[in-house]
Image (cartoon, rainbow, N blue to C red; front, side, top):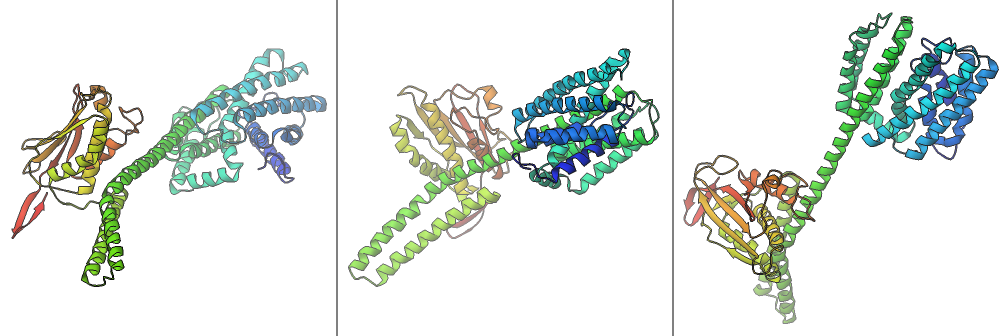
Length: 542
């Protein structure tokens, strides 16, 4: 709907639907007046006002006056009915204006905070509107003096409950985007399941009711909780409205005029509040999970970019060198085997670069690994070499200790990512120390017993330790360090260690931090076992 223009067909549709709601919920009226336990029609009017502002006032007045004439037979007479309709139009209009000012014509039920803001405005607005309307009827002599307080409570709570129960669903149905999302959310087989359960529970609790002895009302929470947990706010809005409509229809069908109105009203309100609170909490959790997933993707993309920058450096440098060589050879008029050899090397290097990109892409997309026998000493030396320039720039002493020449079966690119992340963290940690006290050490040792985080495979494992002179990891931080968004760095997202541990666990290894007065991170990987030797070629297994 447009907030600047009212289409002609919307006005008769609004009035007709408003009168239908008024007629359907004209149950147990107080002295034959517009005072009933549940009034969903103001919810329709408020949504109409949110969409169109003050332009909704004339159609709303017509609908209110039409209800007095067609549904109740004008029990208060023309003058009081007109005055009452004018008062309600103004009161509901002010309530709609307050909601429009607070929420605009955008999302009203997007979060728990906005839900409770909406609830407070609705409660305050309906009660103020109620006091004026009931006072008008009382002044006209239509309500006995001793019944004024009961009439105020019944009409005010009836309006409040009607808006609370009905407005979310009507709001969703009032826009094309809301209808699409509602259809996408509830157009599922399980929706029939909780609707069928709702029908069964409704008949069990209210099917033969004539008084307020609905002892098994708590069964009504089952379909509400089902819908809320599975489909969030949109499923809750549907089931709460269906339950309320079913309760009203069954009470009206059974002519249950001796019910305790306040009990029925409180049941309606509690059902709606519990359902909406759960539904919005579920929606917020799903939104957070989606954002977390997206952030993890971005973090993985960052790690992938860093890995690509390193891994592609050598083949691109080689391609540049071979390209210059080919240019030089062509200038000399060379067209023989030397030129062909340079071109073949260029092709080989381009293939190597493509293989690097494919492997990293497959890993970050599916977790696929290309296992090979990796010499840990060479791996650590290669990664450390990348940091020497940064270490010198910041006055950091980097020492690589003796690492046993024990091959491990692993994906070299993935282990480089882990080591690069640990060294980058250590470099940042030691920068807090004064010059001369900035040290990072990388060591390795073979472990034949149990490693931390699991049992060893037969043959033991290799443990690498990255130790720095930073302030270390506290016990409280160590317990949460490998959770997403937990970081000791001011600018860190806390995702590098999450990815690193995932890589280690995918290799059957582990990664952990020691609690100490300086930084200690350890990673352990099972050793590769030689299977067979063919000349100088050895094959390995994990």
